[in-house]
Amino acid sequence: MANRGEVLAELAGEVLAVERAHPVRVAIDGCSAAGKTTLGDELADLLRGRSERAIIRAGIDYFKRAPELRTAYPIDSPESYYLDMWDYDAVRNQLLLPLGPDGDRRYTAAIRDSSARTVLDSPVQTAPPDAVLLADGAFLQRPELDDYWDLRIYVHVGFDTVLRRGTARDQAWMTSAEEARQRYLNRYIPGERMYVAEVHPADRAQLVVNNEDPSTPIITRP
Image (cartoon, rainbow, N blue to C red; front, side):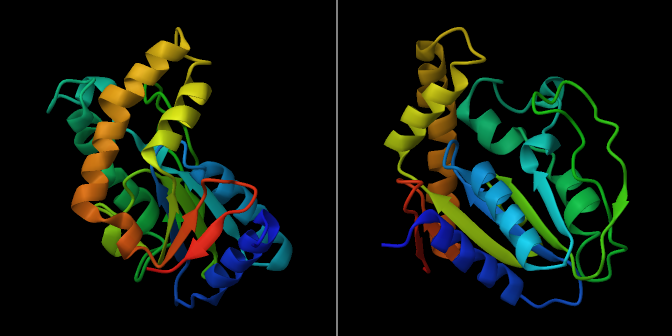
């Protein structure tokens, strides 16, 4: 069984093998607490050591819509989380389209802080033609975004793991572990079940990383 370093090396090789006439846009997709951001950060560090290409990191959590604009569904509902939280127009127009075919490569990596309450003064940057974008987040294979990725990596864990890891992580900024647990049971997990049922992201991604045991993740291909 491969250890984490070996799996990251294999992923790095897969990313560098993608050839485009524009920056390569990689989605690191998956449910809450699957380990997407950690995987993206580690993969970025490895790629910077193996290649002279510019590696761009972006988190789609920094493209959320302001809470007061999420009016289509009750704010604490699974539907609001799944369908109304992210500003997909901004993700496309400010990040993915500029890095794609015929784009000017002038991109913005974030528009709001992770709470979405504060607008960020993020600079517009220009990517080299051979840059690699590693973007992590939930719901990245939704129809609004799916056409704009050059490689899709889905980080898989079961919903029991989502609940356990998410509760342990989010209790730090919530009032208690029980409040965090209820947030996952009533909002995040039902919303993510909708995504899995409608989009089948693990079947559609080019690479799936089973991250139940982060020390020994397993790569599969649908």
